[in-house]
Amino acid sequence: MANVIITGSSRGIGFELAKLCADAGHQVMALSRNDTPISNLNHPNISSFSFDLSKDSDLERLTASLSTWETVDVLINNAGMLLNKPFLETSADEFEEVYKVNVFGVAKVTQAVLPKMSKNGHVVTISSMGGVQGSVKFPGLSAYSSSKAAVITLTELWAEEFKETGPSFNVLALGAVQTEMLEEAFPGYQAPITALEMATYIKDFALTGNKLYNGKLLQVSSSTP
Image: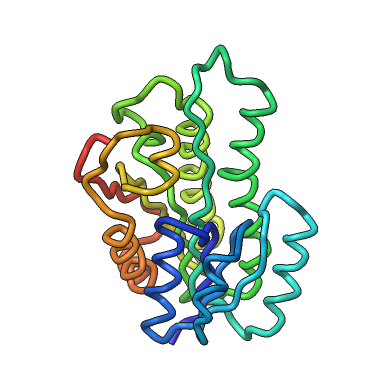
């Protein structure tokens, strides 16, 4: 059984991921700003606390919590912030807020967890088809899609830097998934994939994909995006 950390676990894909991994017998540390939904599960294999990855104080709490685990086998950087707003109307603060979560937060959490990971560990970062060069782009997503492009490059760099010692690093560029975040950004849009369907794929990939992949971008989409 694996020790798994999942960020952004209060709803959508992250919530389903935490349940799936815990139900399979893995020990899960589920992190999100609102930990009430996951805490209400009262699952014996899930530990959680309120966690804002843009706050250094919360990162210190994470480091302290990790002292109870001998190793971390899987880190899933799932937390994300989606902003749909015309570029000329997007303030510098709004742009920075998206990057604090989608880029800087991912980097900080990964830095905090890496010392606990072995050569056989796996860091999976959730990106978006909107961050893939050459994919169809949509107006209003300048901050979001560019931040998701950044973590694709970060993943490639990490895989190179840690290729001798591990762990493995891979990034999944997701297409449209029916989540609360998508509904908030694009009211009325119906995605072809449910959060549970995508979470099931991510769980399996996170637990086994490092045997075949390292430093790779996998496009997980039945639509464009």
